[in-house]
Length: 109
Image (tube, rainbow, N blue to C red; front, side, top):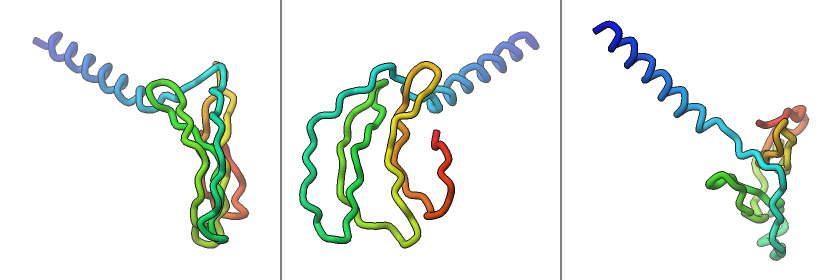
């Protein structure tokens, strides 16, 4: 009976660890995907800011989402563009994000 409980406990831990680790994994590529030709449309207003291309991981690969116009955020924030970051086995896309002006940039991965 005790062996059965120990076995069940170990199985639960293995399943839990595999579940959480699958969410934390990055999509690593060895060859960057080609971006389709993308035309920038006119800004809706002079207040809008252009956000460059973005890539999203979907189904184990990256999908191009293109650029977009957005209204500026609250004062004191700046846009940090998305970029490809080198990893030991390839590259990953680090999404663009807003950060406080004057705050040092740290890798976001």
